[in-house]
Image (cartoon, rainbow, N blue to C red):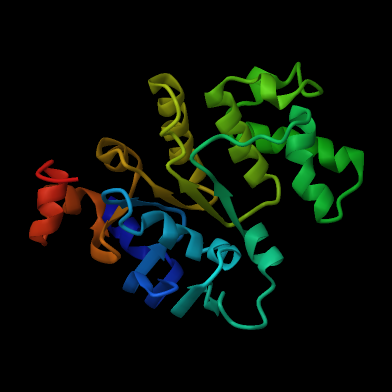
Length: 259
């Protein structure tokens, strides 16, 4: 029955023949992938293989890098995000991002969360209060910070700061959440809190996470893509990829023969 539900999930992001060049360096080679709605998709592979570069294509963060050329298409809900008419500010509201190192703004916990909604024109304090509370609840940190919302976010622990950054991303009501190794700088307890959170987040969002930790990919993701030197070698159901990899290179990587 679960398998049937998995099969029925709608495709949220459709990647077709995606190539990316940094100057002469061909960093991503003809990537094709269908990312399902309300699921966690993990991107695994050794350092420098193109995972984070691919992730940043989904909200056009690579536009900010000099000398980048991108070919192919990425469609979210059927709209090509690389079409000339696309407003990247609107795109990045729809596709939120959480980075490897927690990066709270040097302001209060409340103002960190309210920042995005204010930028997008929300000024009403009642509405902002509600957004702040709901976003912190959504990132499973509200109970830990509700009595210190006016205090600096810089006083939080690393794990709390990362959940605050997730709450900040949720505050503008995205549909897709990109996470670039969100637990690599955290201790095991904070890591497990964020892994539990991912399980919850996929009920409302489509989550794509880059991870170096293969056990984490197995624990949190529905689908996994294995990248190697700019190629997407294999993509599919996580349990299948880890139990019955189709490509020898995938098998070598997940059994620890290299990487």
